[in-house]
Length: 108
Image 1 (cartoon, rainbow, N blue to C red):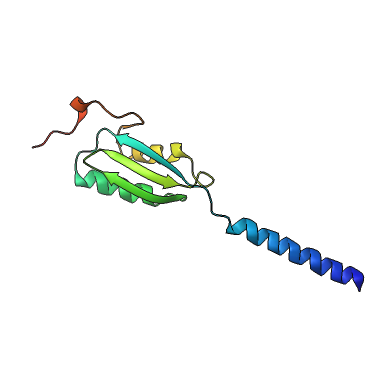
Image 2 (image 1 turned 90 degrees about the vertical axis):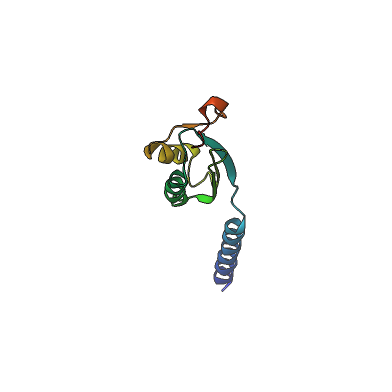
């Protein structure tokens, strides 16, 4: 009987510890990348569609005006490089540094 009670207590402690671990909020990381070749709303839509479906991406803001992609993601689920590669696979040039003003899209 004592062994049975001990097993139940250990099991309950294990469940409680697992629940406490799972309840911890996962750390999020934010990254800003510049998409030099983004020039229209269609570009924004393509990038949004591609990046928003990457597992681990929690929030995404694509700015045509600033030519930036700001992503909040869980680094335990996705690496920043995978996000950058997804944008590059669409045919865009991505950099971590702000591009020169001469590279800014021209108004028609």
